[in-house]
Image (cartoon, rainbow over the protein chains, first blue to last red):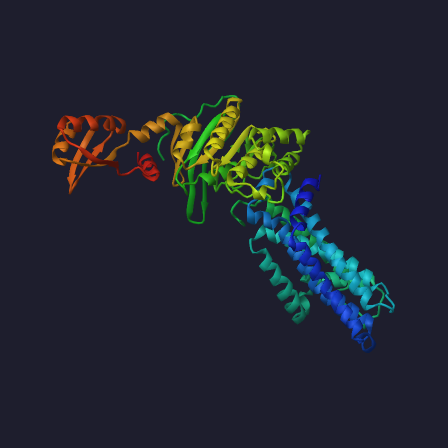
Length: 249
Length: 318
């Protein structure tokens, strides 16, 4: 079986029974608060609410901040904390295929990230667009974020197996690579999970380009998203098969 | 590497040995942790003895499939240990680190272990394992609050839950109080009597002496000695010893001691007398009689090189 219910349950208790979840949910409310301020301040009268919601609230705050940071925390903690505290040995000394361990851990990290991101996406979007035409913007971002969460979690889960500095490596990727380098050099957008997510969101909504214009076309984003997810999961299988005690602990 | 004192435990010609190390080495960069070690083991208790940093844990980790040998082969129950999760159906592991999932109760920890082994009756197997380590009273408490000895016992219960044929334990008696230690030793003896292969590491000579039938002495990554523990113990005891003696008349005592057959060297050094003997037990029995006959009072007598490291280094030099 590809998913083991005991590993899923164990990982859920490990990840969700701690302060981490409360902090993540509090973090998810930042875009909601910004959207609330936007409405209370009357900015929606001066700016196009659809454009602001898509490009600022959902693209920058939810997809650019909440999604990668949440996925980084859950993706690296799902297995990384067990390497750090030595409990991974209990899991790895069982007759379970390494692929089952990876997929079970990924499922929990992905699920937890999706919950946090959706808690952020829907209130933010609906609040910012209240009384305005929706044109599928919020739903498109929600669906795209679910895919984005999977790609990020797979990549960060692999990182946590491959290196004991997964959190630092992940932060560098999110904030330096995606936040700075991708904005400076157009060509590297092909290596950005954020751009895949925005490309998928753009494909799913029916708004003019002046409202939301992602850097990647939908089909390209979907193909790259599938490819990167597949490669990250394969690398995670491979790294866990070759994992040696003392390597990352 | 020295020749084994006695052949390792005999292996049946028809069946593969439970554990086989075949010219195994493991290095980290330029550091050689385990150096060309070969042995085979079958049912019984084998102690892996050596000072800290000797390579015991590296050997156990290779046996447990958590380290890949740099060269050579490690086989457990006829299967390669590295990259073979199926091996764990018949192998149990008690790691040295005391970490357990702190949010799980002792019962849940063992039950999850049983479930991960896909045992048909996981609850029953869990209770049986917990009873074996006598932890029923604390099994409902979160294991994060357990004492070191309790964590050790719950780890052993989790490793035993699927009744493995091979049990590997890394420093299993750390933190256990004397009563728990005796109980765990009895438990391991019983398992060995039932045909299981048990390998445990320790840097404490007395632990190995009390439990192991056979011993592998590891020093600086090399197999310094292997075989029956009594033989190795005798070797350790009968190695040359140096005693420092302070007596009322060192010169007179020296003259009389030098004629004792257990003594091969006596030297006056300031206020002390250094006595070298090749027979530890015979000398300690004889010295009081020699002093009495010479009418000399002994104020102090102490061995100079009793650290475990010196014992091990003697075995390596042999």
